[in-house]
Each structure stands twice: as C-alpha cells, then as structure tokens.
Length: 137
Image 1 (tube, rainbow, N blue to C red):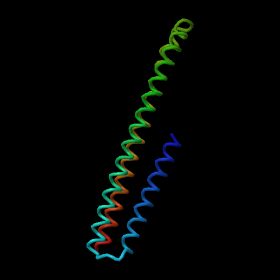
Image 2: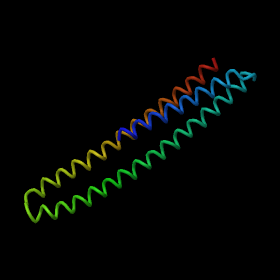
Image 3: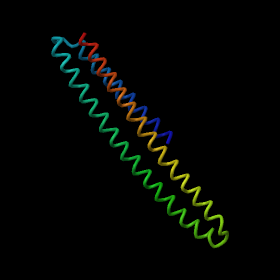
Image 4: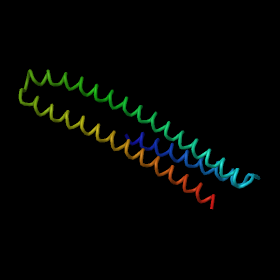
C-alpha cells in the first residue's frame, strides 16, 4: 500500500507542477489579461478533469486489487479451514474471526486511501481555482 500511496503523491505532485508551469507560461505570454485568464481557467478545468480521470483509474485499480486479494484470502481461508477442521475443531472459529478481521482491515484501508485521494484532489482543485481568482485580481 505504501508504493501506491507514494505513486499517488508523485502523480499529484507532477500534476500540480504541470498546472503551475502552464499558469506561469500563460501569465508571461504576450496576450490580453482577459484572454490569459480565460486560457488559465480552461487549462485548470482540463487539469481538474485529468486528475478526476486519474483518480477514477486509480480507484478502479485499487478496487480490482482489493477484490483479487479478498478472493485469494477467501480461497486460502477455505483451504486452511478444511485442514484445521479435520485436526483442531475449535481453531476454525478463531481462524474465521482472524480472516474477517483481515478482510475488514483491507476494506478500511481501501476506504481510507480513497477518502484521502479525494480530499487531496479537492484541495488541489481549490488551490488552482484560488490561484486563478488571485490572478484575476
């Protein structure tokens, strides 16, 4: 999960840098202020859409990985349960509890990652819009 978190932060950093570069380039371009602000607003909207698309792709990838992991855990759990059931009886209940705990942790981690990514994207969008508004003034 830390690799995904790092790559998400890297992606957001790259997009923020690209946004800053586009805005600075437009501000120094020899055009009228109204035209420049219009272009900045259009670029900000494009970048916001790109971030939203990337978030959706990342969310889908994470969902798929969570589903794959859950399926793998479920399969392995079934195999372990059968072996343990034959040998230990009461341990089955404990193994089931542990598997449910792991499954719950995986789901909570996914939800937390999704919430953090959504919040970060909203903050970046707000910062870009604030920068645009500041450039208007």
